[in-house]
Image: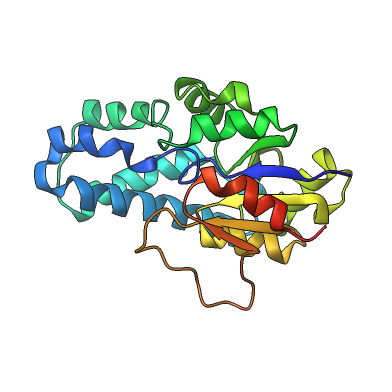
Length: 230
């Protein structure tokens, strides 16, 4: 069976810091710090809910994103209005793709590889941002953790994707992600994984589980996939 490529969305295909321009109009020089803190808390809240076992403690990615925004606003004392917060949340549906992503996905699609979006985001939220970035047509569809009611890197998420799209053969699944926690989760679930090191400052965690290949952009992905063990 051929490889099935599962693309993380936020941070890999889509730039979550595309909010900075709007933040600059609201909080000035604090924009970059605000965006970073917001993103970090958003992810932390997904980790917490996954660690709590999901289920009744599960709240979707939008709830975690809103909570991260509220936290950053309090910590940085930016006193954003309700209208400003609504505008920032709305931007999450209009975030841009990284520059090389559209052409790279198009080329992968033409090569016959099965490419899926694989995200902690909600089905509606992910579909909207992919469509806005005009890359949805290069993907076969969206797998959202909503159907599992927990978040990556919980093993149940990777197992559910493999069951649906790779006939439960985890070894046929390849994760492409810029998030080390996601790569580690995929490797723990028996997948192969390619880490996208978006900036030189990004460092992979010193864990016993490491990516099968490292790239700096999706234009390098075909060679990386071809290098993987079959």
